Amino acid sequence: MLKTVNILNKRARFDYEIIEKYSAGIVLAGTEIKSIRLGKANITESFCEFSGTELFAINTYIEEYTFGNQFNHKARSERKLLLKKRELKTLARAVQSKGLTVVPLKLYTNEKGLAKLEIGLCRGKKTYDKRESLKEQDTKRDLDRIKKAHK
Image (cartoon, rainbow, N blue to C red; front, top):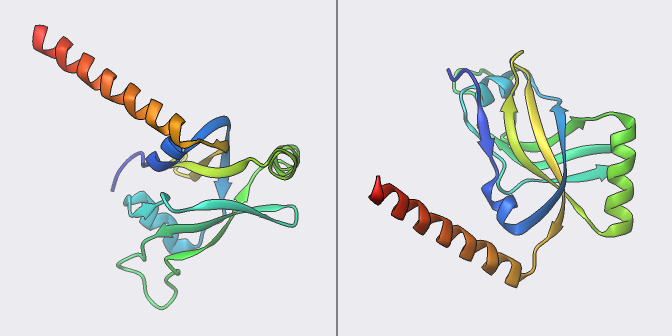
């Protein structure tokens, strides 16, 4: 079992420009936290959506626990996110008025062993922005190779 679990959504950082980050708790079933602690989760295809005044993470994949019995959880289901009322209101206002999106960025466990989801208030990138970020990654990679060769 891993001590700290960090499951990243690299696709979100490529597709979206992150404006603000929030750390949210997740409402989980008993076997879901066991699978997360084993690192058997995926958030690349997930997104967040408001249902009334509550925020839910949709399409988050948490693999079924192998030692679970008939009380095992479903792999893909809606999971409620726990945020303060003020944070939920600001997120809801931003999503409705400015056309922004709430995207999960990282699923991790904190020092107490609780599962947290880092979500970001994001704006979608245009294709030319994506090309720029690819170009920056390539130049950074080339510079790192040159630095490593001269050491």
